[in-house]
Length: 204
Image (spheres, rainbow, N blue to C red):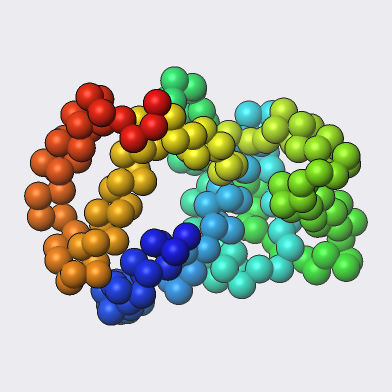
């Protein structure tokens, strides 16, 4: 985390410029928020079971500001399938009406969703707890395909790809600290690094 934090500090001007350009171009200020992406993925998944969906959401500024982008799916237009990681997945859904927003205090369904979300946060952030361990097992079985869950294999330093990623992060950190280009010669560097690790891995 130290390398990532320092990299961001070294390149702060570039990061600010990128965010300002996104705002100036008309891209919503919620560009880094995952609410819209998460809802789209859930609705696409649920549409495999339900021909028509009435979507009632907890009040959310990011979703409310971008709610009209979901109107294109009212009446079922725009549905198709894609192949991702060898799996056929539906993209799109059939909404009965525009997104509706309600206060969770007044909607029993949203209250249930809040409880499930809180349980998920507890399960995936708490170690050594019997209930958390059990919840994690249950949630993995019912998780939707669009969820982003921690992959412990990405921390296994015996993996050559993980070793390469760590060394690439160090190289990017070195370049950022020295004010060097992030991309010049990077393709060649990655190829060279991959060959070196095949011959002489950092860990075996």
